[in-house]
Length: 398
Figure: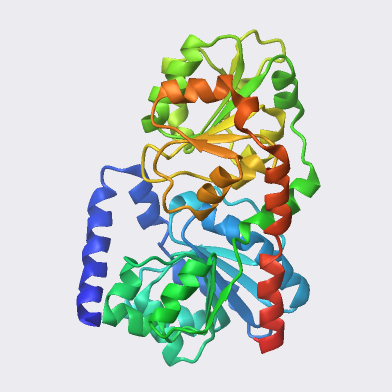
């Protein structure tokens, strides 16, 4: 089965190389891995031990951020290596003083894996959420390198459990920190018992960031003029909601933050927007297009309600950042795989919609469904995951 997996990986890589001829993101994915091992060789340390964190993209990094911070505070002499699978993760990553080196993950071939581990020699490997690369996991096990899976979520149809080949590899991992009891019970049903329920460490990252209370005076002044609705991490598939609503409701101010900056030009052709990068403080326009990266989590506090995109596509983006600022969040129907979305709906912090009529109704009746006290209580009760993981590492002397 490992031979079949390796064949699939090779086919995948060839497909990316072909797609890179026509697609910028695929081109970045391919070109970003050039000279990867030369760069890693410059980073490797003979004096300090290296702990390796791997994230698929920026969302998973948010789950790892507070853990990395607390790890470095407790193990100051260790070096932290962070790898990303996708360009959107690496390109949008902002400098973090607790991280010593950032890189792409090499393609998961047996040759690449052995070369990577020979250079890095990690004392621990930590994979965030759903990152299961079987050559890496297999080789980490063979080399007896402790391997943790953090913020994982499992269901009955999860492919890593469904097949004997993949299940036998992940069984060798040192420990699983899962987000919910259901995930633990599913792993236990396969006799995987090295499991701890710790919730979502993203909550700790969000609480830590909110304490900084970072201000953006330009956006703050824009939002003070009128009630402001923010459309965050939106895609073209969200246009039938936000474009239509904005056109019909000029009485509000709007912030639009596309998931990818390249989407800004398309939006500007459909709506009369002011670009944040060229914001005129005396502008009379009521739509501000956020064409800067890395500031979204710090501007929700200036808004009255938020729509988070992705729910009419592959899945919603970060909703926890929104409600942590004591404002309600609305999203499309594709949220089933996101535990926090289910929790927030139960807490009357969030609502899901199928069309613009439902969206309009929720905007008009916001006070009747949003429960601020339950929202605040949710964050109070669900913090502490990052510290729980650090205490495990200290206790196990990893």
